[in-house]
Length: 195
Image (cartoon, rainbow, N blue to C red; front, side, top):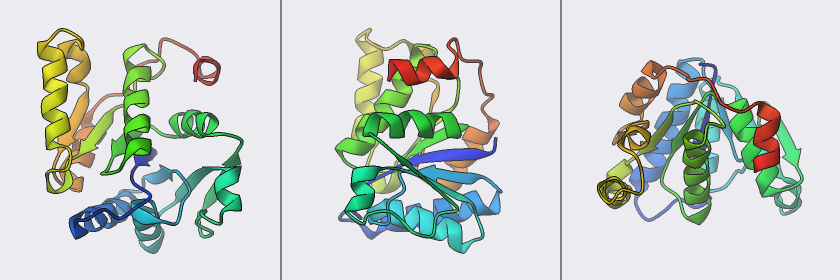
């Protein structure tokens, strides 16, 4: 595993624990020689995880739509910054660049990224591990809801079991690193077309 995509909020949220966990994850990625792939922003938890990774000597690969660069939201210190034409292209390129995915606390955009990457895994567009970081209990309710989707027959147990879950960054990263990459059923160019 060489790179981990992190989905997270463009705001800091109400609990300082969210930013602390984002900084810890960024530092851990650098220490483990894993590149950070993220949305390219300098604000909120996005900025926290990227700046901490850079400060620890890590590689940070940002992928950001052009309209966000025009609003001066891009982090100028990224090791690499890919400016793309749309949110759809952004998600597809992040998926291609990363070997695993972690969702930190966030809002609608983070939920969109998390559920799309879970869906892509379910239908065979990738075989990469996905993790949910439940900082300060932020995702506890969602975790219970996802268990309900299995109990009610909408999500197969085998698919739900692919989602790794932990309250702290280090154990979650350990679980992702221990999860074998599975072959995708579709080629990378199909990922672009199906997004």
